[in-house]
Structure formats: structure tokens, C-alpha cells
Length: 336
Image 1 (cartoon, helix red, strand yellow):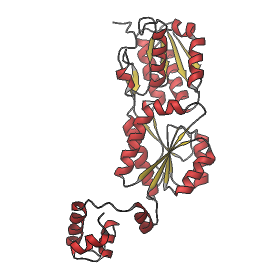
Image 2 (image 1 turned 135 degrees about the horizontal axis):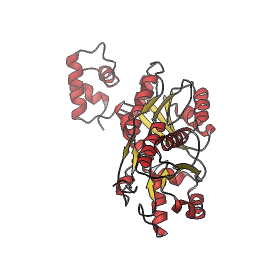
Image 3 (image 1 turned 180 degrees about the vertical axis):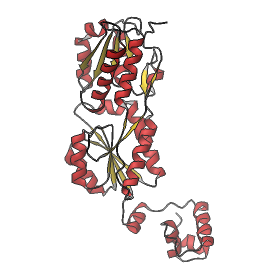
Image 4 (image 1 turned 135 degrees about the vertical axis):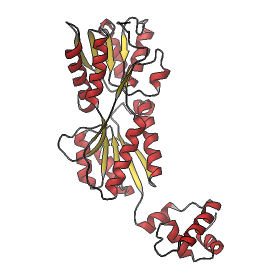
């Protein structure tokens, strides 16, 4: 492996000069020497030691990414394409910003705090933690934190989310205008993003639904095995509805497979809609009508917001990214 003193010998400069160029301390280095050293570094495919960089800069350049794990949900997190896409987006943008990602599934607040302290991360990005958990974590760690998909009211916590109400509203309007009268919204909780999506559906059906149109809601278990049993127990009600609108494509896909195994045709017997437009939405049969969000952009914006806070920029408010309905084959088009 090539060493700094080897680069210095080839460039005809001191090892200190090479080190300064590697670490960006180039105020006292001529442009000619900077260009020459960088060419030699590239030619030799020199990779600086992370520990040396940390020592030289007195910083870790680590960004912690925490995903809240609740009992029985680990398998869902691992297999949910939304999570895999956003993790990929975070890792790519973190690397592009010259940081490194430390990923962890957090079982508790204490575990999250220990991770931040032990590894001396410069900032945190969280997903799947409640607003209260993020507020507590931010106060305890005293480092920049950006959450994904939370609601804080007037509290100054950086967050990258969606126009969740508008997404629920847009899907509710589409379903109502297609003539569907009995719409059931299904989620695994009634807080934050899922609550906003439900409010949007409810408002749209009230405004655009035909006489007698109803929007109902059911809360399903988070645990996958318990959710399978719940689907079995509620089969008769599920197949009696016009449309089942799930708070995520993951749940919509799961339900489509369950219903098809029972001999129920989608959308012939019951329509199904989702939220996210994850990769599974297009490879499912039938393809899922859903609310599209730009998952990659959400991850990128979270990293950009965090690095700006690390660099000392002021809080800029909470960002809500736009959404749109994507019409595919899982919802019966009654007006056609």
C-alpha cells in the first residue's frame, strides 16, 4: 500500500505538504503543487486512513442512521422495499457529502443514545421513531438530528416528510370520483403520517363521494404473524368493501396475496390501493394503484438538511415533499 512519504518523494515535496492536501489544509500550498499531488494520489489510487482523518480533523465524519424497531417488526423492516430504497438513498448521499454511515436498528432510547455517544457521530437521521422519542434523543445527545416522517407542531425539530394529508385526500378523491362508496383505510397506528393520511381520505370522501359514501378505518397489528391472524379474523368484512386503501404498499401487497389465496379476485371482487409507490407496486399482479412519493429524494434531502446543521446553519423548518396518485390495475375503474 502506497504511503504518504512515497507520494511526497514522487511529488518532490514534504510529507507534511501531502498530508495538508489530503486533509484540505491547502492555504499555504501552491496550486501547482496541489494539482501535482492530487494527480499522483489518483494515479496510485491512494485511500486515506479513516482513523488518520479522524485524528487530523478531530471529528468522526460519521452520521448515525437509526431505525426504530418494535417487537416483532424486524422482519418487516428488513423486507419492506421502502426501507431498503431510503437506506440506499441515505448511504449514497452521505458518501457524496464526504461522511460515512453507521446504521443501527434501535430497540430503545438508551440504545440509540449509547450508539451516538460511543461512536461520536456528528449527527443522527432517524426513521420509525415517534416524535416524542426524537425530541428526547435530540435533547440528550445534543447533536444535530433530522427525522424522517414525523410531526412536531411548533417545535423546532428538523424533519423531512410528505404531504401526507394531501396524499390521502388525492387517493380518497380518486376513489370517490370513480364511484366507490365503501372505502376502508387500513394502517398499523393512528398517529403521525398515517393519521394525516386517514384525515385526507375522510375529507375527500365527504366532499366528492356519492350519497351514502363512507370512509372507514381499521388498525392492524404491527407484528406480521399477528397481522396474518387479523386478516383471517376480518376476512368477511374485508371482502365486503369496495376498496381497501392501505397506508403502505407493503401492507397492500401482503393483503393482495392473502385475498388471492382465498380465491378473491383483485380488483374484480374488491379493489386495493397503497401508498409509497415502492418497487413492489409495479411487480405485483395486479400492479398496485398507489400514492407516489419520491423515496430517493426524501433520503437525499434528509442528509442535506443534516449536513447543513452540522456546518452550523440555522433551523429551516420542516419540509413536506409532494405526492401524486398513480393509477394502475388494482382498483376497479367504475366509470370506464
